Amino acid sequence: MSVLCLVELDAGAPSDASLRALTLARSLGDSSVRTVVFIEAAELTGAALADYGASDVYVIEPSAVDGYAPQAWARVLAGLATETGASAVLAAGTDRGNEVLAHLGALTSLPMAANCTIVTPDEGKTHRLVRHRWAGLLLEEAVMEAPVALFTVATDAVAPVPAQTPSALQVHLHKPELADGDLRVRAVESPAGAGGASLATARVVVGGGRGVGGPDGFGPLEELAGLLGGVVGVSRVVTSEGWRPHKQQVGQTGTKITPELYLACGISGAIQLIAGCAGAKHIIAINTDPGAPILAHADYAVIGDLHQVIPALVRALRSR
Amino acid sequence: MEILVCVKRVPTVGGKIAVTPDGQEVDTRTSGFSVSPHEECAVEEAVQITERLGGTVSVLTLGPEAAIEQLRDALALGAHRAVLLETDGREFGPIATAAAIAAEVRAHPCDLVLLGNEAADTGDYQVGIRLAHQLGWPVATGIKNLTVSSEGVVARREYRGVEEAYSLPLPAVVTVKEGINLPRYPSLPGRLRAKRAAVERSAPAWAAEGLRKQALRVPVGSRHQATVLGHGPDAVPELVRILAEIGVLS
Image 1: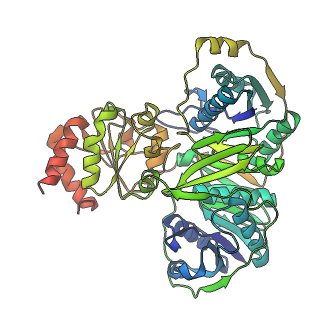
Image 2: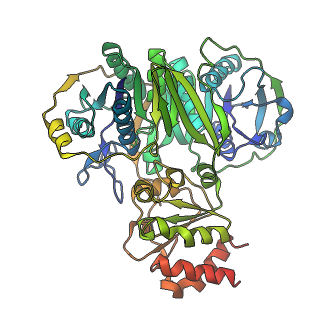
Image 3: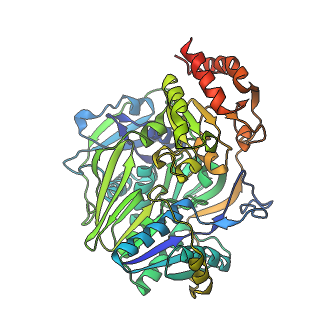
């Protein structure tokens, strides 16, 4: 038996979220992990796929499917799942991964479990799994019974771990068969302003909440973020008040972040915010209220007014 | 333009979230209920579109009778018609939910169905897509900018720093995210109108699905207590030491 994994690419190499999905795919214990990528073959960097234990990669070139068309991508996975006799199809729990697997579920009338953190094969056509509910604030233990199991992998819960020994990666140029209408909905791409993307992958996020006080209070946070090589990410109240654009929101309905450090300034720590920052390696809170809920999620805290603490911190960092 | 907006009644969780002793539900003894921010924005978007182009906004929920509260909230914001697909307390999976909505759309045709990108509670990320497949309609998800004309819609979202634009003919399904607009507050006349409005009801069939919930739990070790480094600017030297220890100072 084998499993099939959709791999998203960053400049020709697997994205961080896809490496996490591959790590979970390998844990299913099937004899081979086959991967699917959409790219010109010459532009693919396959080394990480081999490092993460992929046995095969099916390359779908732009001449077959040009760009991102979710239903067409799902059709490709459906065809390959049948061809390879896959017991499961996986993707990263990204906007695209969830979307493509939902299309696959609809095309095949199979159930799909989004944002899994653990999947264990059980007897027959059954998998036991743990998945995120409430954006990870709760875990659901569930059973999936399906001829082919469809899973996406939570982007902030499974750590990416290479295989003990790299595999010998077989590369296949695959010509998929599409159905009428598969390319009806497709993305026309154009560069967007900075914001959401850099927030999702930033190494340091300096968070601002209601305590910042208004749209004019973010200068020192921007300055601190610059000094730490990071970006500013704000709480929901800040975007609801219109102080900052929504693309800077960290939270259940904003961006989920996985930085080394999340410095939460003037943020009380509502559950909606915690859902977005639970994947941070370290959380430090700066808050006037020692009873703020954020302190129950932070590693360290400074009790005080961010309007005094942050300028002092900026001065200290500048004088180093 | 005839628009159907689908919303879901979920607990309003504030500072923490807890599970009932049997591990089957979120403990709602101390919480109210609402719809998710994505869905508030879906209602607002639909109302704005009909304000520009004319037409009606229907709001639908699948849930217990108590979910009429959420329908009335949407009516107060400007929706014209409310539909309750009443459940018997069992949790409908995404396949049964999509089938129930599709049946309603077939009975009351519309041009556009708006949903939130994902339900706040179950986070299944698939009802809108399954609905579109059942209807044979095009679908775009995670949308944060929508332009609607009688010809069709252009739906935009951002993905990893790149803007994606999708052109869809109508009828279509679009799932939206918070940020697409800033929802209005209900007016007093809106609230009064909502209170009196009739709610259409039907009871779709529940069906078992291949994905079955066993139990819910709060992640272990997700709450602890922060080590306080100090108070005010005096804590800065210790804070700098920790930043260096974490390895975020170059």
